[in-house]
Length: 551
Image (cartoon, rainbow, N blue to C red; front, side, top):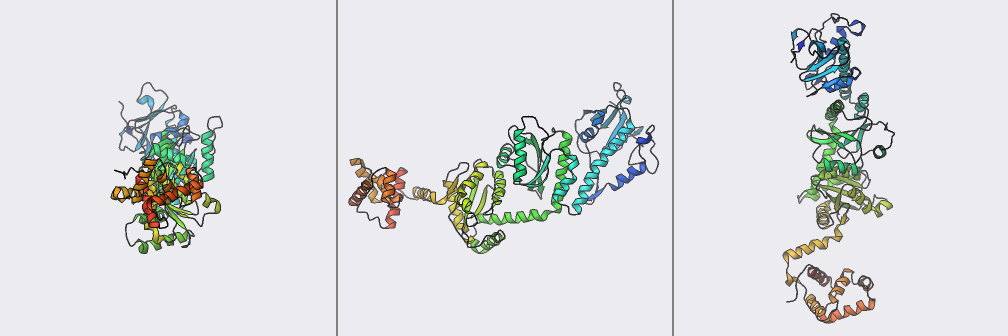
């Protein structure tokens, strides 16, 4: 064990005297400059004076010309200054202390040690004064960066300007994205690696630059691994795809609401602890910027709460909320008379977080407005705004986005007035529940309404509900080996079209006509009445589900 001591050689205690370090020569600077630095390098935050704290990892990285050997157990960002050890007991735990190694460690000759608590650096030099000034330079550089960013935030600088001021401290590409991974600001560095084996990284870089967003398939992969990782003040290290360099990801919050992500992809350099801490510091700075620029975030939250009314059970919805929806739609250029549909979207794995970037991607389409609500997302399609190509292939286009995020949707009927939302929500939810739960499935309600009715019949009706004609035809088929039940079912489904029915049954049209005549002869049915056709179709559907109509 060796004791650590304080010294009068402190940048905080110099006064107006010249530097008293022996042998320092022209490399040492006068005390007056450092005092001015320590006094002016403060900025008010919540009424407190602030100076950026550094860590042993950052100091080690800055002193790499001295080939430092690191023995670091903690390495937290808690250093506020540097002092040289002497005969006065140490007074503070927030300083880094320098000493000649041979005074404390017999085996280390012509070395300088930097000590903070249980952390130590051994430097390959015996010039303690030069190391002292180098560490002061380190504090100068990082505190000047922090001061500059804080002053820019006070002046109302943009997010991109804050990132540009941080460029000297980052040598890999840094993105600030919203919660959907759309790019809000960036520090782009072209890939320096030219050897084989980095094609995927280069393609990802090019895709991000072209689309200003991380690709949905990469977002899905990251979320699948780290579904709950982007918690407040949580830093994670993960890969954005198989075989691709790791990235730092930090969730940025405003009032405990996840607004942005800070992402640094390690294209050109390896992951290091100092790099991680500087990255984290940038994230904290951006969160301060978010607090000063909360108006845009509040606007997004207002829209989010508006969409939440879609799930309202309030019977006065048509009066209280329809107008608000139309006003919001008017801002997007949606006219009241234009045809619309509503989609309800879910993820096949129950990962509602992936629906947020999906909604933002969909919002890039001029004929879509979407938002994520708890476990579901809701999207409105404006069919009249979609051009001919998009309108004809709208299922394909939406389906591709759903497939990339392993999601599926239920689609309502066409409507124009937002006062119809409560009814259309029911139709969309019916299609969502009874449709296909596979990645990319676009389930139209007209294809699944009967499945809903069938369930109601099963729940509330029994075999006695079955139309008497079905009993007669089922018995006749069983005795004579005919297919009158099958023919009647197909005939009704195809709206009594003889040609379509014949094509479905792979028989001649005359055969269908003959079977229909036989059905009418046996049962006396008059298929001109829609009520009778509905009753027959429901009965035939229940027969398929296992009703036994013959004792």
